[in-house]
Image (tube, rainbow over all chains, first blue to last red):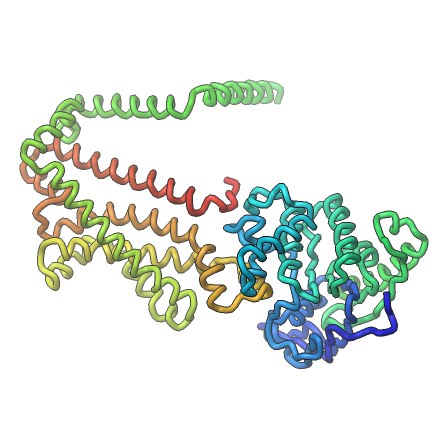
Length: 263
Length: 274
C-alpha cells in the first residue's frame, strides 16, 4: 500500500451530538475528530451507548450533528449520498424483492439501464457467493446469507466509503468468522474505505488497520491503535503473539469504559 | 406424590396418542366431520320444541331455495346486495387509501382526523342509517353510503397503522442507496404497506357484509338483508335461515378470494411464528 500519498477520504471535524431527554440534555458525542484515509479499514469499539452508531449515522448523513462538520472528498456532508454506503446490523433487506431485486436496487435508482443494473447485481451476488439464490426472497435465507445480500447491495451502489454498523452482531460465531474472512478478502480486492463498528475486540483487530477506542458517554475518541498485522489476514492471524498483545491492550481500555458505564 | 406422577404420565401418554390420532385424519376429513356435527346439532335444534320454530328441518330450508326462486327474488336479492357491498367497499377503499397515507405522512392531519375516525368507528351503522336516509332518501345511494362509511373507517385506520409501523431502517437503507422522497414513497412505503392493505381489505369486506342489514334498512326494494326483515314480518323462518346461510357463504367466498390475492401479492412476507 502506498502509505505516502494518503488522501483524506472522510474528515470528521469536532462533532458534537446531543439529544433532549426528559432528564435534560444527553450528550452522545463530544469533540469527535478523525481523518479517515482513502482505502483505509477503520474499526470502532466501545461500550454500548458510547455513540458509535450515532457517529456512523452522522457520517452517512442520516443524522445531523448538533455542531461540527463531516466532509467527504472535501465536500460537507448534508444528507445521504451514494458515495457512502451503509450495511445495517438488522440487514434491512427489502422483503418484497428477491436477492437480485435487492442488489440492483441501488444501480436502478442511479438511472443505470435494466440490463447493466442486472449485470452489476450478478457480479456482486457472485462476489458473496449467492448465485444459486438469485431469485430467492429474503425470508428464504439464513441470517448469514441475508447479511451477504446486504453487503452485495451496498457494494452494487458503488460507494467509495462503506459504513458498517455491527453487521455481524446478530450472527452466530461460525457464520461471523466466515463473513469476517470474506470481508477481508473483498476489501483487499476492492480497496474501499471501510468504517466498521463492532463490540467484538477480536473482530476489530482482525479487520482493522486502525482500531478506534471510544469512551463511554459522552462518546469521545479515547485512543487510536494502529494494527500492524500482516496481510492476508484470516483466523490464524488470531494465533499471532502480536495479535494477543494488542488485544490485551485494547480490551483493558474498553473494559475500563465498561466499568465507567456501570457506575 | 407417586400417584400423581403416574397420573401425569398417563395423561401425557394419552396426549401423545391423541396427537397422532388427530394428525391421521386429513384436513378435508375434519371439514366433513365438522359439517356433520353442525347438521346433527341443527337437527336437534329443529326437534326441540322451543327452538324448532327458528330452526326448521334442514330439508325445508333447502326446499326454500326453490320457493324463493319461484318468487323470482333469490338471484335478484343476491345481486342487489352484492352491488351495494362491492360499490360501498370499493368507494370506501379508494377513500381510505389517501386518507391513511395523509395521516401517516403529516402529523397534523392525523391529530385532526384520527380521533373522529376512532369515535365514529365504534358506532354501529344501524344507528346512523336514519340520518343517511334523511339526506339521501331511499334506494341504492344510501345503501352504498352506509357501507362506504363503515368500510372506510376501519380500512383507513388499519392502513394508517400499517404505514406507521413500517420498519424505519428500510427507509434508511433506501436513502443511503440514493432514493429520493418519491422513490421512498413508491418503492418502499408502497410495497411495505401492501400486507396491511390486504388486512384492511379482509376487514373491509367483512365489515361490508355485517353492515348489510343496516344498509338495506334504508328502504331497499331487494337484497339479502332487506329480505330477511321482510320474511321476519311473515314468520317464514325457512327462507330466512337460508338467507342467513347465504350471507355466511358469501363471506366465506370473499375470504378465500382474498387469501388467493394475498398469496400472490404478499407471499414474500416473513411468516410470524404462532
